[in-house]
Image (cartoon, rainbow, N blue to C red):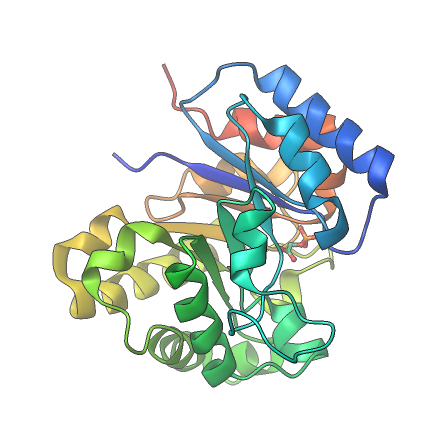
Length: 253
Ligand code: PGA
């Protein structure tokens, strides 16, 4: 009932030529496959070129971050309206690297989310606990807090424009993915929290898992009832690995 969604977060990798090639290879090999939704998130400077490469294909385009204002004296920042203008349909907000390496607060993330939706973008909101929080038994408290703060002021009607990505911080780029059971538990918690706020509309909410997703581990994660796709970092930089992950997300026929 929920179409799986696989997204490739290229982080601060690639160059102009590599970005075009990677996007072209992914789109070319996917052809007209629509049983799974696919998007790539290149670095800002390559968005227009990748938008051009992806035109007319099934692969969607997004940015990895944006600011929370439309325009102004914000040197070095990128407005979600600019992101949309560059050809993107999506933006990621609240990635753990933004939270932990750049000190982004839940308050700022919520403002970014509002601005991105206002600019007409669809948003992947990332959430996840640190190793220490998990070890202290605080996972649900942290996820609940990040979800509640992230969604302040968001009406249920906007839910179709929103995707959640559960990304345990300890699993990102470490090779230590969450077990399918840990992922399912966190996803079920997030869905029930969303349900208490938005009612049955939460049943259609896509919740991706992210953190060391590889072709070898993705099938068992996607097999979980509340895992609706993957946000892939490292493995999205190689077309064959990323496509293997996408293929694992196809519905069984
Ligand atoms: P990873 O990154 O797949 O390299 O762990 C995931 C992410 O940061 O979105």
